Structure formats: C-alpha cells, structure tokens
Image 1 (cartoon, rainbow, N blue to C red):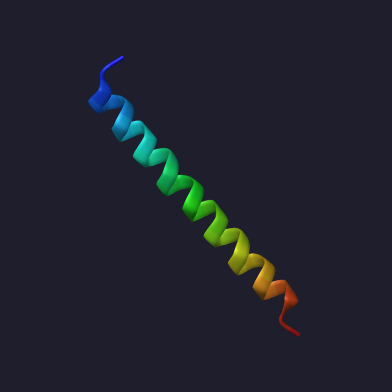
Image 2: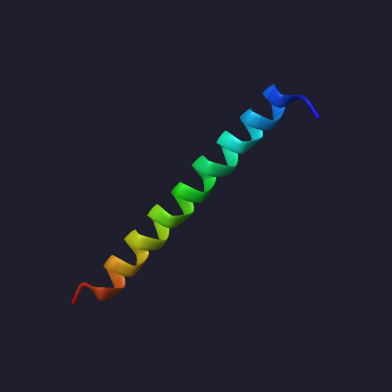
Length: 34
C-alpha cells in the first residue's frame, strides 16, 4: 500500500473521529442543559 495514501486515509479517519467525538460532546451537553 502506498504510504502517502495510507497517511491521507489516516488523516481522514482522525478528522472523522474528532468530528464524531465533538458532535457527541455537543449532544451530551445539549441534553444535560435544562
């Protein structure tokens, strides 16, 4: 596998994971808010 392609896919996976965690935190904060 091309190392460049692997690094690009790894970057996409990292960004996606951070976005999911960020959205989950916002959702949790929204539910916790009265």
